[in-house]
Image 1 (cartoon, rainbow, N blue to C red):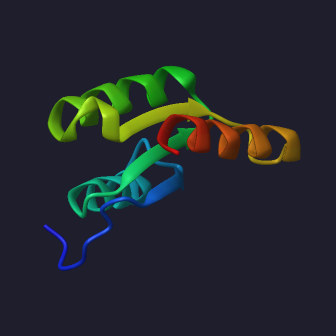
Image 2 (image 1 turned 180 degrees about the vertical axis):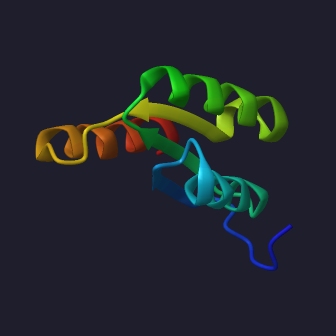
Length: 86
């Protein structure tokens, strides 16, 4: 577990379904943060969020596909994070 406390914080992690991004998501959740993870694949986001939800609590993690080259999509992603986690 990390040596810091992020309880009450909300994080958005791009590329959060695999590799370094997935590791970052796990560390943030372990530190108490709520996390919205994203990648280009909705299926990957759903699968990874469900797996992490079983481990860390379904109310602490969500996934959403997003094309980060689209400013409107990024704005929607931030709105989703605010709506889901406050």
